[in-house]
View 1: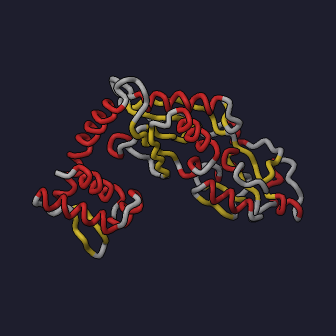
View 2 (view 1 turned 45 degrees about the horizontal axis):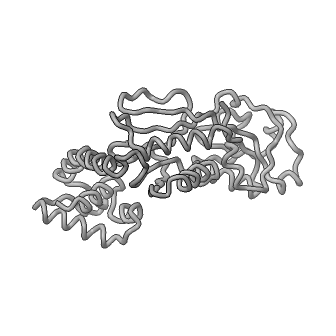
View 3 (view 1 turned 90 degrees about the horizontal axis):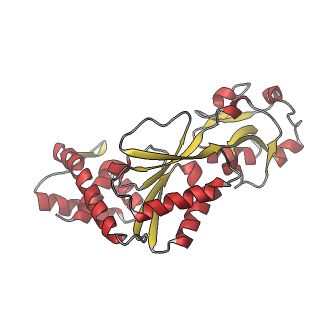
Length: 290
């Protein structure tokens, strides 16, 4: 069996289509189709069914995906174990983060410093707002933004990096034509922009616009659409934004940023070194509070 073809098939299973898998792997769709066809020939099984609903797994396809994930993870551990068996980080480190975090200087600083210190390690960063399963998705480390404690998991270790700092923002252009809010209740007189799950509930009035992505909210505020609440690490990418001097009710319950990795008997050098760099880089961060 071609393990590369098997890995490609698992991407199709996770992403839901050949095209989406090709995009995740950064290869042509024809390459994905060819690899899956080769795997079907090797096994003598039909793994995918093409219909009007798109690409769906057959019963054999679902069984193969379920049974092969843990085996591939075991092989990765063997490969990575040999790669840095002498204690020096080598191989490939796969990290995942929410889209909001992954496009900012906060995470860029961590990744860049890790690459500088350990150039023998190739870093693959996957940005998704989906909560990934580290074992099933072949992830080494995951950045998680969460309110309240993470669900207890015997197979995972979590390191809290700090609480995200938030502020109320407007653009300079918007403030030129409006009265600057002085207290929290003044926001009722302004068009409000909110994250549909993270900040909408604490606003003093219903938002005019809501979205499920802080980057989109920051762009809307920067274009003068109104006033909104943002994590400070998102706002730094928009120099026209002004942080208003307001105390807001959600200030005591801001989300926590944590780093999560699989619990193993022998933690690989590449993961251990990444955790160390991440903790060091975020310890004095202006975007996190302790």
